[in-house]
Length: 511
Image (tube, rainbow, N blue to C red; front, side, top):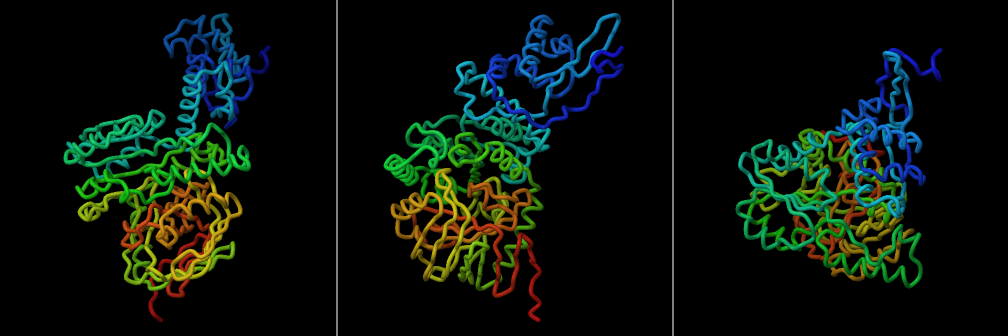
């Protein structure tokens, strides 16, 4: 008689049926307090196996591995999927209960889970999610960045500046540069290495800066709406704004001109790429699901950069031949401005030789948008923005009125105090229309609330205020801040070219 209906001559090799299990109970935490069990669980996600087979795979003793497997089974993280009799011995095959495991918020505070173990869990499960659920190969992405975006050549020297938490992208990038015959230098930590970079700038071909983890004022966790009230809330926001005025990567792009190292590298003809990066802290402060933030970033990064460049070029050609832009939005916005005579910039992820020669060899990843600076003094009307963020803190339902290119009033449905503080503390040109962007990245379809990525959202737009000298404008400011306009309708010289995220980029025949 078949035991529990599981005995069979062939073990089913298909992946676990469930996509996701949340690790949230004390028994599960205890079961994963040992890194060897995390490794066993990862292997049993990939394929079923007996305790003996698992021991062979990891090089451990059968007895110890059998104990670890039973602990995982007791915690409900693996289960028996088959019992096969061989030579009078009943072999039990174990399999993970899901393809992906998500560590619940707050689990790191449990005394039974060390920081090292939590990191192993997170890295193992997110790595599995990227590979199996999102179907993303980090090494392939890294080669695209090195070959297509930076156009790295043999014997080029590339510097990557990041933190320990960024290893899952830094290590593939390092391998990619080496595969192309280039040399890679990696620096970790917050320590100032400006002198080092400037001393050796002539030897560098490119620099990749990965967004530094943001350390928020105070020790509070969670969104500011959930945790902070009254005077405490206001003090938090004041600290945020003060830090933004002096921090190179304040979550609002536009900083290269304000930073002497970036400026020196650009003037020396070097390529610079700034990469935003998803972190649990950023997700928590923004009130977002970390997996959502994580998936959005990796998906947006994994594009065909040559095809993206062609799409941006077509849209840019149409915009550069226009005189007036009008943008309306579902929230009631209606804004017009002139772009006649302005150069259109393509943020397509590829830093060309032409851009490098002109000291413009700088860009964001993920990429995918066209950018133009409105003619000074021509922005009139109301912009309604669904969302923006400052230092990772979300501000939503924003309404800004412009008159002759300058802000005359501003309000927000969420975190209006922060909006007002940023505008009041910034220099005078910070209150002027600075840039207009149309997103063109086909892998970004739904903004998540982080403007650096969201501005690439296909068929959405962004208007930013403040410094615009990098794109041929006249504004000099300590701020360059973008506001998302979701599902806009865009008119060029009265002709509708975008509505409900559908483009019409055919050139007018004049008839």
